[in-house]
Image 1: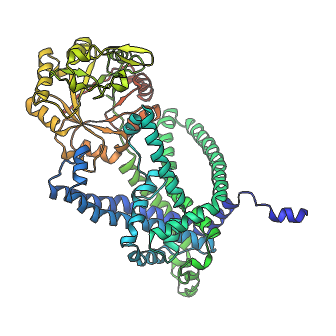
Image 2: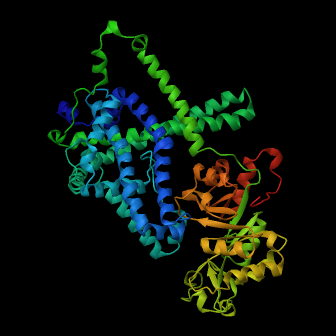
Length: 612
């Protein structure tokens, strides 16, 4: 009985043991391929696809396609053209990367080390069977649903797609929005779970129809659900152990460097170590996932369904076939040269990708804007919130205005007042006087709606304003002129900046008064920022990266991020090199920035000079 129990007992960390076995044979191939593919993605694939997309934008007259104009482009014939041209290319690039990793993992399971060139040729030769009507489902999965899972790894070209935080933030303010968000995320998660084995099936089997692949993957998922759960628990335990080890190593390295130079250790060494560590993890994370996925597939699939040619792809066999006497010096020392080449490529790859994706220069005059005032001091966009922003030592108050029925300017964000007042009324249906009779309520507090004139009088000489011109679709032609006249009447043009999501309003403001500093708020775009005629950019945090920051710098225009609401993100964007942030936590952001600045600059107040 004891022998029977031991025989049926599942070995501990079985999948992890198999991972080590596979990586013993395939680890070098994984890293070399991922490194080369990431460099190709940064240096070739992304620029090539960008050139094609920008040419289509120019062809259709959408040189400044962003936000709602981007949606207009998407549903135009030029948007359809870009989809027809770019989507298949992106699909092939992403599929090729995943397919090569799965092939390498499969050969590793067989105890063989695959030759990358031969595997790549085999993958490319099988691509045509996927480029048909049946591949639409696979393209939607690889280009949209899998990236939306956002679990920290993915293709080099499209690692993840995040729902913008401003969208989720607004949805989470109501039960209806929470329900919509919950249903959407549930559908994305469920579909990805059912497609767990879709990639190995597409790659390793003679099957090009995604619907058939989806049904087979679903059946395999239900058969393997408990093994998947145990595997995830293994990864969780190993991940915790790994984090502890890395943390201890970092402490040891920092302590060691502190004996050399405390300042150097704190600023240069730590950042360098973290940067290299993150880059190294990016090289192994996706191959590890694909290895685990392939191992599970092999465990639960019918071996007769696999359609893979192994002969001629084993690198070790290829080397053995060479005549030892005819080998050159490089052949005899190939392992040393391979190791040196790997280290060299790792260094070059880290330098290039860090420069193009995670490199920046922190700004001494980093600007903090209080989003709708300090919302913890009072209801958003009200007098109490603005006073709280002043106490929080923010550089600017970011506030929203809408035009009323009598063409006045009300300081309010929502077109409909139900969220903040419980009354189902619209701003454009009421005069300013009628709006000011409505009491806004939130968390037991009450407040009235202010006019732009009142806010300027309240804050003049105390704090600068960033005024966002919002639209409800019923504005009169006097909207922009009323804003400009209000600023002139109060003589605060030098203390105020303006911004809008509507590009037409941006251009109208600059046409009425070229001296005004006007920014364009962007929540979605694929165009270069230098295409937009404005004084500064305000970009939603999901779309901010070093490449977009560089695009703004090349145009000699500041770039700000909205809405940054945790201290880690504050630090990230500060070190990335943006000019400032819009945040709901101005006091904490100011404290973190002061800690990050050099000691001589911590007590100095931030200043801003836009458009110089």
